[in-house]
View 1 (cartoon, one colour):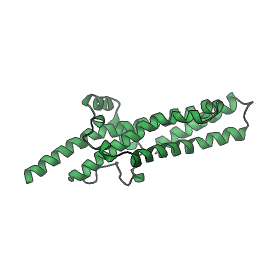
View 2 (cartoon, rainbow, N blue to C red):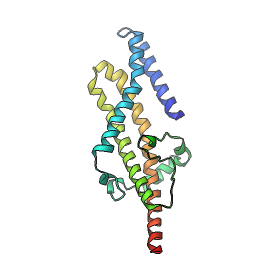
View 3 (cartoon, rainbow, N blue to C red):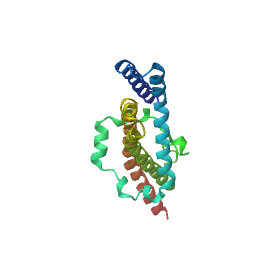
View 4 (cartoon, helix red, strand yellow):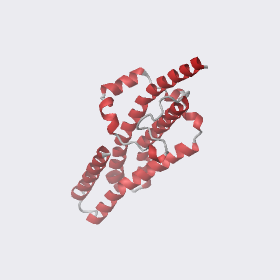
Length: 192
């Protein structure tokens, strides 16, 4: 959480300073400040809209463990490990409370249905963060150029950077959950 607050705060400060001191003649201090303060709310609302559409407009079958698009290669996992994901992944904000399914830790590691749901929730999260990574830039088209370039573009870049980390964590966790699911399925088959 601290990482997100610091990143957003630094980005807002840089946008404010850049716009107030770099282009001092064409905007008042109040206008620069108001535009700067609205950015996080605008981006969060935009991300929320895209997340809601992904969650409620798309069929669940697109996010199950069988969908090839969501499969993660060993090479991809190795890249995440080289980036030190094991050390920082627990410090990244997890917003499962909005979907009533926390992905911070596996609550029931012995239930295959729960693990399948966990995988599906991770796949939803991957899509949400992937689209948030891209869609922030669409906001550029809704504002005049002088606002889009000076305010929206830095906010979209910051949003993209902040979307990468949860996307990587979710992709990194899915193969581990898949292995756990296969183990539980084999165990259940033996017990029958």
